[in-house]
Structures are given as structure tokens and as C-alpha cells.
Image 1 (cartoon, chains in turn brown, purple):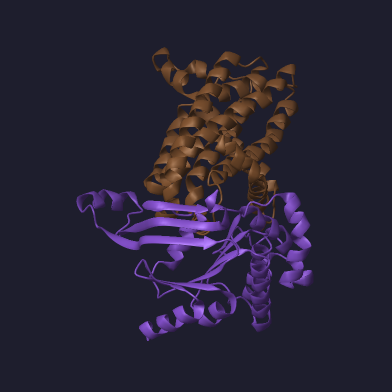
Image 2 (cartoon, each protein chain N blue to C red):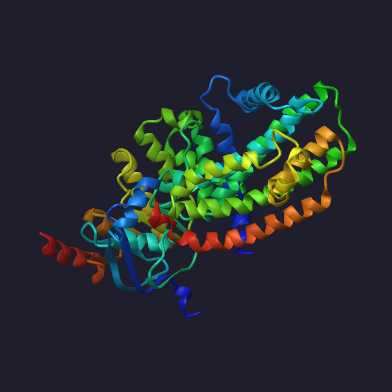
Length: 257
Length: 246
């Protein structure tokens, strides 16, 4: 409950740090905010070019297929990578000013969320451009987004607080994320995985989220709501445990940094 | 409710720091450090501090470098926590320990006022109400809409100080910062401090400028090796302190 009280009281800080993050990112680059589109677009281009060459894919339109998986994944991996770094990055403020520390990971995840919502325009562009069209299942988009957000908040509590004490985790996270990238149906459909490896899909919460986004935009069917509900509960559980650990560890932040 | 009149109550506080002689920051280093573990020293910084600061008091903490002044101040802001003992504060607290926290060089001075003030826990409405006073105090005029990276260091500090001083807290913790800007601005700061003191704000200063202590404070506390050596009127404490150190 303390968390919500703090968040409400410091809502302006949350708002300004998200704003600072998003607008500050491209402030001095020539193409500016265009990069938020160009970056994922180029990335999709690379995957759409390389993967059909090395992998036989039965997908009707691999470009749209990869696009629906890659953009939510970028949201996931960026948020975790940056959350792990946020305390070290803001070390000199943490050492000098008191404010609820949980604002930092939450604002990182939130600004990545905003970035993702903006990048959704790319998905829409591809889906409409290739003549897929939109169906009524788009109403599930905010729901999937919410589930992913909760999951990320939970994880960010863990990684942001633990990295302060164990800087190595920062490097480790990069490797884990790369592994997870291949353990999540992003470049391929979950169905192509042989049955003895299906457990990877089953226990990886991100596979449900990616599949749900793909259901909405690519397969144009209802996502598996039951699975989403379970992932949402896992996310909430991670939030509770993560916040508990975070609030224990945060007392030592200023001394460790 | 006996603590109602006290702004800050420090009860029996001990603080030790672990000083890591070789803090490992890479995987290689941390693997190696397993072999030569415990290369750390315990350093006692505060050794049983008991202190009550009444509402409306202006207190100076003096002492040589490393006597624990800044640590005590950080404990009061709840940036760090004591190993033993308790610290209670009553009322909204602002620390002027770090000026310009959260400033982003690419944004305008005006936008940075919002960034900075929000760290102190102000809402948009509260900042809107104060922004004119802040800009006026900073004397930045039309520069306020330029990016902060174009400011001179003096302008930067002036803006930062103006935000911090206008937060309107009941307790102000000030660490060695009344040396901002030129002579004119310093005097202005000093006057503002006096004004706030007369309004009944509680203030705790850490400073080496004995002149400021005499001018601003009605109580001085001399810290020596983590203990309170003397606590009393500024004149008396400073005389004793200067005798001991020179």
C-alpha cells in the first residue's frame, strides 16, 4: 500500500522522468523521434531478410509475422536491460536526494511502454499495408499490453535492486535475454518446436505474450485468455515478491553505489 | 505527542561504513576477489549520537573533515540508514545536498525546474504556483527558455538553488552550498535563508564558514570523531572549536 501512496505523491516525478526519458533520447540526433520508427523498422528488415534464407518458413507473410513478435520483444528486453542499469545510472542522485526509489524502475518500464505503443504504428502499418486488415480482436491489445507491463514491473524490481549489489548481473542479463530470445517464438511459430521441447514454450511467460500479439494482428483470432490470466497472476506475484525484496535492498543503495 | 515540538530527534545513532579496499566491478575481478575475501575495513563514522532539534531552530554542524557531519545529514534525509538507533523527522523535509538533481542538459531551464522540483515530491500544480517565484529568484530572465547546457556554471547553480529554496519545506538540510554564484547572489541566498529562518523553518547546516554560522544559526554542534564534542551557542562553540583545531 505504501507503494501506491508513494507513487501518488510523487506522480509528477514519474511523469517528468518518463517525459525526460522519451524526449531526451533523441534530442540531439538529426532524425530525432524518427529513430523510434527507423530502429525497429531496420531490425525487422534484417530479420525478414535473413531468416527466410536460412530457415524454411511456412508462414504466409514472414515480414508481418516477425514484426508482431519482434516489437513486443524489443519492449521486453529494452525494459529489463535498462531497469538493470537505472540505479547505477542515477547513482549520484540516489546518493544525494531522498525520493521513493521504486520510481526509477517503474519510470523506465513505463517509458519503454510508451515507446512500444508508438512502435505499434509500425505493426499497424505492416498489417494494413499487406492487406491483413484489422479485426475486432484488436480490443485485446490493451489487455495483453497490461499483462506485459505488470510482468515487466515485477521483473524490474528484481533486476534493478539486485544489480546494485551484484554488478555482474548486468552482463549476465544480456546473455539471458539473448537465450530467452531464441526460447520465445519470435522468429518462428511455437508449433514448429518438437514436442519434447514444448515445455520451453509452456514455462516461458513471454511466449504467451508474443503469441497473443500475433493472434491479434497476424492470425486475427482471439488470444488465449486463460493463459494470459495466468501470466498476469505470475506478473502480480513477481511484483509483490519483487517489491518486498526491493524495499529491503533499497536501504543500502546509497552506500553501495 | 511529546515529540510535536521537535523537528528532528536522533536517538543513540551508530553508523559504520564498510570500506571495500578493492570493490570488484567486473566478473573477472569478483571471481578473483573470492580468493582474497574480506579486504574491507569497518569505519565507525557516528558513534552514539543523541540529538534533539526543536522546530524553528537553525543549527550548524561543524567539525573537521571526516567527523561525520555529512553522514549525519544524510541519515536525516533517509538516504542512508543507521546501523543502530533511530532518527525521526517531523514535517516535510528538503535536502539541499545536491543542487540540480535530475537536470537534463538538453532541456530548457523551465522544463528542468519541473524535473528538479518533482524529485522533491512536488506536484505539477504546486510547481505551477511557484514557477514565477523560482524564475525570478534565479535572475535568469529570458535565458530560462534556453537549454541548460548553454548555461554558465554560475547560472546553473543559481537555477538549482532557486528551485531548492522554493520547495517550501518545513525542514531544510543544507550541506556546504552557500557559495553559489557571485557576491550579489550569495548575499541574496543568505537573506533568503534568514527570511526562511524567521518564518520558523527548521534548518540544519553543514559548513566550514564560521561567519555564516554566526550570522544564521542560533545553535552550533561540534562533531568530533563521530561524537558530539560540544553543543551550545554558536559563539562559544566556535571559539572552542577554533582553539582546538589551530
